[in-house]
Length: 159
Ligand code: SF4
Ligand code: SF4
Image (cartoon, rainbow, N blue to C red):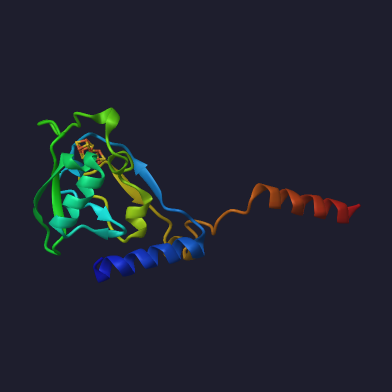
C-alpha cells in the first residue's frame, strides 16, 4: 500500500470515528464497464504484484482464471482484464459474477484511502470536519430513544 493511500485511509477512518458518520455510496451504475478494466486484485490486504502469487490464487480459486494480466501500473501492481467482459463493456456472467465485482464500489475502498474512478456513476459521500464546524451538518443526531428518555425525565420533574 502506498504512503498517501495509507494516510488517507487512516484519516478517513479517524474522521468517521470522531464524527460518527459512515461514508455513503451514492449514485448508480450506468454500465460503462470501466470497473472491469485495469483491475487491481487484493490478496490478504495487499494489491497483487506477483505473477506467481496470482497463479497460486487461480489454483486455489479457479474462478479467478477469468482474469488475464494486462501489465502493471506505475506502482508495480498487476493490472488485469476480464475475459468475461463483452465488447460493449457489459458482463457476460452478470448473475454469477464474483463478490469482488458484485460489491464494487465497496466502502472498504474508501477506508483504504482509494478513490472511485471518475467515470463511474457512483461516488463516496462523506461528512467533512468543515461541514460540522460550519454547522452545515450537525454532529450525529441523538438517538430517538435517548430523546424520548429526556422528554419523560423532564415531564416527571414538572409534576
Ligand atoms: S466477471 Fe463480469 S463484472 Fe466481474 S470483472 Fe468480469 S466482466 Fe466485470
Ligand atoms: S465503473 Fe461504475 S458505472 Fe461503470 S460499470 Fe462499474 S460500477 Fe457501473
